[in-house]
Length: 361
Image 1: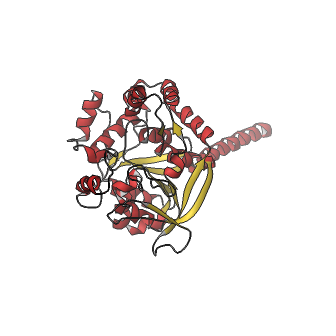
Image 2: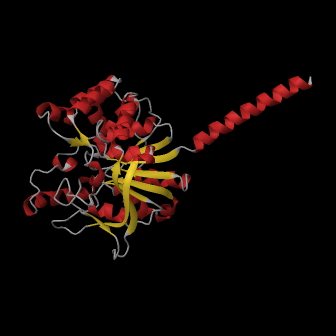
Image 3: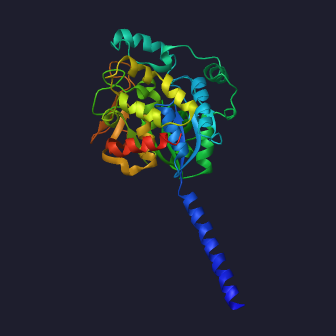
């Protein structure tokens, strides 16, 4: 009888230890809100699907912002890609449809003339806004969506989720910064409750990719970027062109990744993606990844090989350097905040990570 009792006690203890271990593993998951100007697959789409699949990430939601695409497009693309990876439990939340500065898209026309940006990429500023997310979805995918976007504003979603998880939420801002900038202005009490903010934006020590001085995300809405980097978050990490343009993305790798993908919906997106078209037209073309790097270092911070810490700011004065990211060793402007600027990552390991996740799509 005593032996039986000992065995039962031991089994109960083992079961309890297993349950405790499972709870501990769940508690270790990084709570993340992805704030994105969503596109199909590369770059934002792959970043989102990696986060959705990562075992150490609890993706609380995906908030959509103006940038590469209009919010209705980003909403449709986000929903379809989460459907493809069977993660429709992750809410897609539509966000702010315009940059902070009134008539920002009108000023871009002037910039082309005044500052010589020519035919530079301007994202959503270059074409009309679609009528609705559902119209985009039906036209693009020829089927009814299985889920709807969350009936809530992205700014309110950010505020609510941060307050519900004080000190635990990382904001991954890989588009323009207007959702986050508006959230901290409406509810400044959330600032000390945010664990960290990781941005894909800016170019500190190399030329821009839209103007000679500015990277696209921060150039499209410099006022929002300035508000965010000047907000005293506990930690700010910046993935800018300084690291992104060290990771060349060429035709052979794109084809290898496309061949790894198993889901026919995602594979179809890969094959009709603008990047695939570009590689077909110009096989020697060199592209880069941006948002995927930001998502990858969140999943695995040991990928970071080199970084510097500087006080950062964004030029919001309309002129040749509008939207330029600025870094200061000392004598920084009053109100600027320190941030980690990532300079180098382990490229081989990062590509291996991307290929591993894509093989699971």
